[in-house]
Image (cartoon, rainbow, N blue to C red; front, side):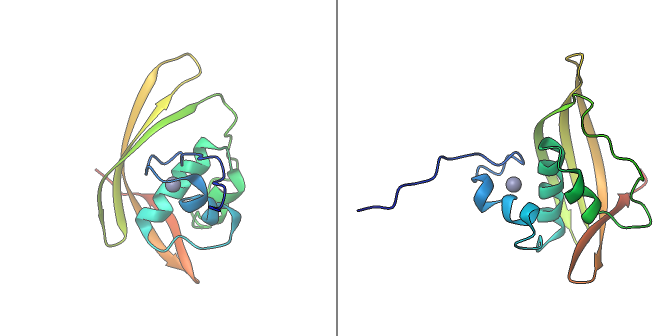
Length: 126
Ligand SMILES: [Zn+2]
């Protein structure tokens, strides 16, 4: 008898994998994101799922904003990773504002190691 599959829930980061096999274990704290790209993906998913705790946990304490409002109605509709090299990940995130407008945000994010895992530091200047 094959094991019944849990319902397939695609990961919000757009990897094509299921949430449980992609960003889920990072969000639950089961497993630290092993690379800056994995962390970037899991942070995007955390925005999509309004998981502010995870975002704070993976944000460098020096740059983490004191207030983080994830309930402003923005929807996160797509992530494209352009380049992941060393401690930098360049990506475009597609967002839909509450009014229905689509925004594309391109950023080169910088990550640093802190303790056992990686944390988000800031966006590299243009
Ligand atoms: Zn994912």
